[in-house]
Amino acid sequence: MDTQSIDDQLELLRLKELFMSNIDIRSKMAMLICEEDSSHKEFCELTHCTPEIAKMFAEQLLMDVFLTPEEITSERERLERMKL
Image (tube, rainbow, N blue to C red; front, side, top):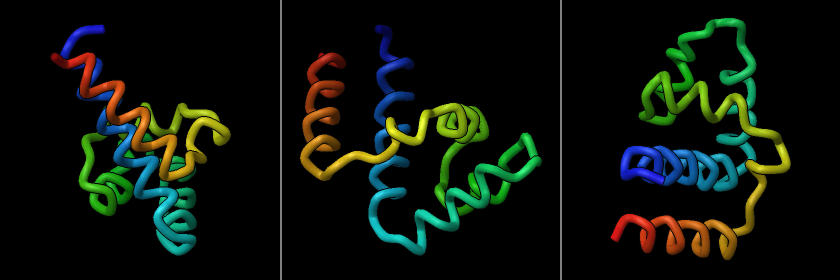
């Protein structure tokens, strides 16, 4: 996995963490990512991500988005080690 791919995965992980942070954010993110607008402009504004990352997030299976804080920490550590 190259550095850009790792960075993309870390950014997706950040969005998953945000998604899991509280029900209000989760609901808003879910509504925005499901809209027909393929640019995901409002989603990007809410989450401070690029349209490319928003598209990648939208393609995630729901079960891959629901992570515990421990799973998020473990995955972040694994990805950070890969960058070295």
